[in-house]
Image 1: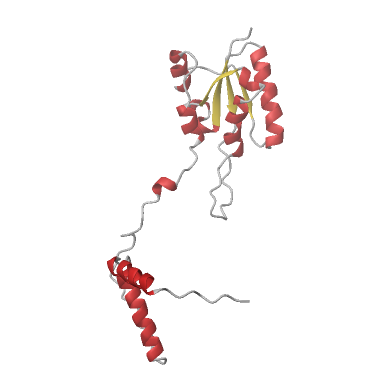
Image 2: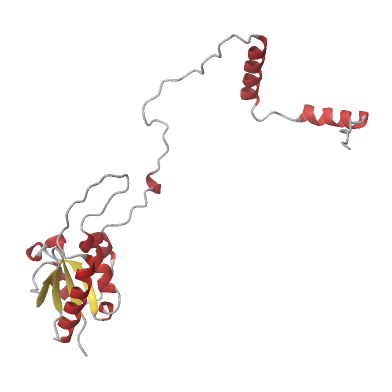
Length: 199
């Protein structure tokens, strides 16, 4: 059994007409244009629809600025530059200027991540055990990979991974400071690792 829709009483009609007359349309112009085009289409079924008017424009004149959405990860050198200096500032300045000679060095060129991680761990812990304070870790700048997609690829997997490994246990307990090496010692393809004093 279906219910019939209830019709408005005369009082309700009068109230509705007062409310409707006091209201103003939010989008009056577009609705009117839409109803006119519908009326034309119903009255003249064979008539073509008129194209909307296109105003002159310059490329990018009304494009919103989306620069704030590009939250790119900082580079390794930027991350290391932001870290606080934990070691003696004078020694740090001499180290970053290439005036200190590393006491030991390891070259991770050509190694995979699986090969490099245990070698680096063995080297850093061994150097700390021998009482070394400044060691040099050479990663290389890395080969530029094929950039086939829209997602940018970082160059140098080891160069990006080594600083993270040095901050994690077991090496994080003996590493005091990590900085990119001076050009004399390999530049951005190597790191100075300043170790804590042995107990």
